[in-house]
Amino acid sequence: MTLVGLRYDKRTEKATEFLLVDPHYRGADENTSAIIKEGWCQWHKSSHFSASMFYNCCMPLIKK
Image (cartoon, rainbow, N blue to C red):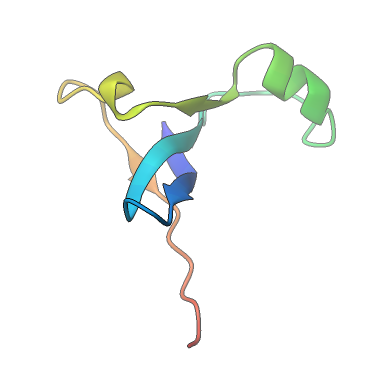
């Protein structure tokens, strides 16, 4: 799984959900509706994470 985004609650200063993409998808990149409908890209709560799985992180640098 690749972590590509997160939902953040400004009040609590905590991430509430994580956007994960399965890198095993093999299809047309422009077919975003199928990617989402078939579960290749989904929002998950922190309880979804498991120590037995491997995760990649996409962490772009942001200028202040």
